[in-house]
Image (cartoon, rainbow, N blue to C red; front, side, top):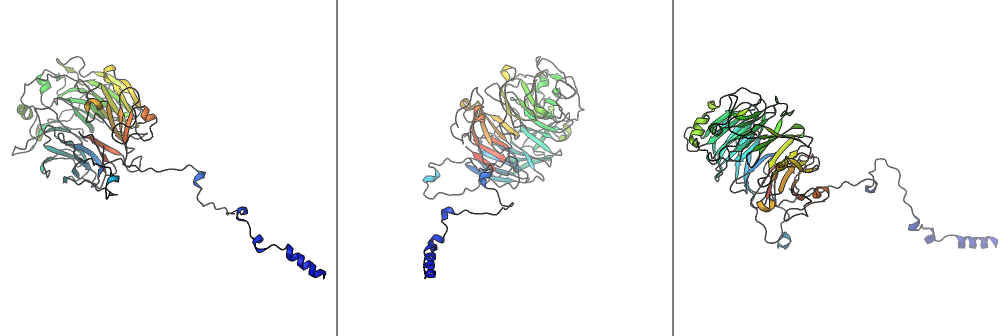
Length: 510
């Protein structure tokens, strides 16, 4: 009987099947330690990759980096790019503005196709790293390469080849002459230090490409060149630290301006002058809008400002035909080789500032890769490999107006240029590009610029850059050491910015 009672009690005290199950709220997951298991995102700072493309169109037919870009002097939407694939492309950046945004389209497209080229130009055997149209009517497109060739194409529908020459190992730059009496004339600088000036004459049956002058005073690579605004003088700099101003058409000599050396440089400064010397060379040059002085930029953030001779703008002592055929040499043998010389003392009725060092500046820490003067204000902009931009005021003894230390966030500034399609409103604007893959626009007036400005992409993030005058920026290229960066840009009359990317893509921003 007792056994029966105990069995009944045990049955009553035994847990039911439902009570035997563990309540889920009381459960705890036991995970064994695994040292190879990835950390939880909350355990470390998240690294977010932002992909942004502000362009309205693109061109991507180059198979290698784009090294240079130029646009037509009359129709600024016609753009030419040259690259590491030994090829030049010509295309139109005239992109119509849609009447309605894509969201209003009945069948919106999710992808964009590349701009189609107007012309594809080949013939170089190495990278195309210099491009320019001749000024005036823009009749010719010039291409220069690391193969030493300069090739002249007629700027017609098919861009046929008119002439070519190969006098140097490598071409560093091409600059067209703005002199109205010498249309279709240009200069090139080479890695052997030589400077060549050519004239294009499509009517000459013997040779379409004629040598006007050749100079050999630079002893190392000639890195940059710039004409005076009137096109009468040419200024060049070199890795040997020398700076020369040439008189290719003989107009300075006709005005009584000569040098004490036997050469044709009316101004010359070299590293032999300790006041001018910049160790490790010069890499950029720009001439003021008045032609009164030139700025040269070199290693270690150093800039020198040098006075230039002022020529009589009405001087007609030599006809254009006589200057081109007599002042220099029509054939390549006419460029007489000259021995290197030290500082050139300029004599004659040119004023006391000619050849004088007007200012020695050093604000940035690394090489000055680009210089630009404003056409409408007394401003000089300098872009450095240290990623900064400095704005100097030439009317106030080149005082620093603004130092934008993080203009391109520590990556080299490649190019700066003043202006925009509306000169009065945008004359204060400076556009820059850099190896961070970004194009930025700055307001160089005093005080902070406001907002994102009209059009464009606005300012992403604002902050310190906005306080230093950033009004807008455009992104879309790879950069920041990831096989990208913007190696150049051009501005169109319609307000577009067209780029040349190290990633092999050209983007059109508005």
